[in-house]
Image 1: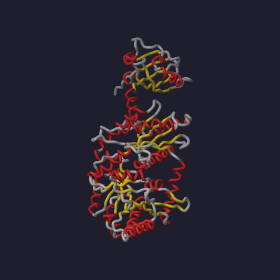
Image 2 (image 1 turned 90 degrees about the horizontal axis):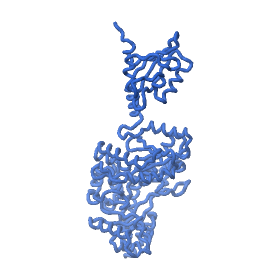
Image 3 (image 1 turned 120 degrees about the vertical axis):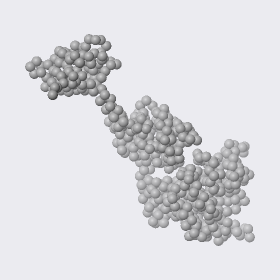
Image 4 (image 1 turned 90 degrees about the vertical axis):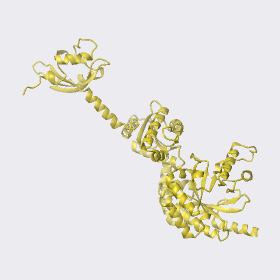
Length: 543
């Protein structure tokens, strides 16, 4: 078998002296190398064949005149270069070296593409988790104090993805990437962890500086997404962790940023929360104490009385309370989000519903038309068997279902709409009524008021508190409340106002046509015994 000559098996063969002077270039080598240089005359020194940054590599490889060596370098003049691999062997008699050179540009390009694919997210082109981890490690190695990591979770993305499909969901993620990149500084980094979660790395910013950037992030995401049908609206919940106060390595910082992000989601979404070590520890302490408190019977109900505009007690809202043996009273704004995260809310919610209905049965011995309102957590409502659980409680307690009102939030109505509508319709057929709690604070469409079997809306106390005694004119707050009341009346809904604390508020609501009120003006949250006593007094006055 005839073997190929050496100068046909490789792209070029050279013979160079120990001082890099070129002694010989093969004919194929001349034809292949000449296009990489501006003149037709090839350099006389091998070092002049090389890219400036690669000369030191070859010089170091030849130190001590080794018998053989190999390098990957670039050859050619600026603007016309290629990657080559050369292998050299020393000719012991002459002291020269023979170099066989192979063009590896295509290999380098393919390897570069593979490295890019391994380091970047396929959909958005952003750095991925592995790249982010290296970047954070580099910040730590550079001993940068005050750099921050922000974990972003899109609010409402799952609904868009489930409703319109993954193609639309992907388009939303790409559009989100474009918006987020626009608000970043030149040294900041945006990465995608997966799903709807992104991370921003601020190498030169402390928490305060990062929060200024994140204000623009909230605004950027809040704009309508024309990539989805009906101009979908999303929000973003953000958690911030700072080095080294909130972690001294990548894993701890990301975990703490994740904890802070879920704080943002539980606090109402679409906000920025800075990680707090004391709060994180408190969460674990409270979760443990809640488990023990449930067993010890530390949870109980109070009742916020509700009055008609004639100041008659006609109903109450059941409020969950917890008095811990060690800490004393723990507010629902503290323990309810933790209960939802810890998976305790379905149990506590069902207990509250059962207790309230048993008490309602006793109230009916004094006032048969008395109405009990019970708050329902989104987690409870999302259960596949929620409607059955409610009906089981009604059967167990024997109450008139028409006297039970379940209070749900706007966000609950917007989550898993098909399941929500089925559960509402099934329970409404049995006579149970529904009220929209904190009406006016959500971001959803008002169309659900006519589509779903809702019987009342509750105006959030924040709107009522804005009615100050010194404001006698028709302020924007008053006009807004009037509009809510008129909206409710126009579609046959009762309107309940929360947080009524003074006569000015009461008189305005009465004149505007509000149906029911609750608040400290006529009654603070009280025990079941106190409700019964008030009902007895009211009956005696009528008699």
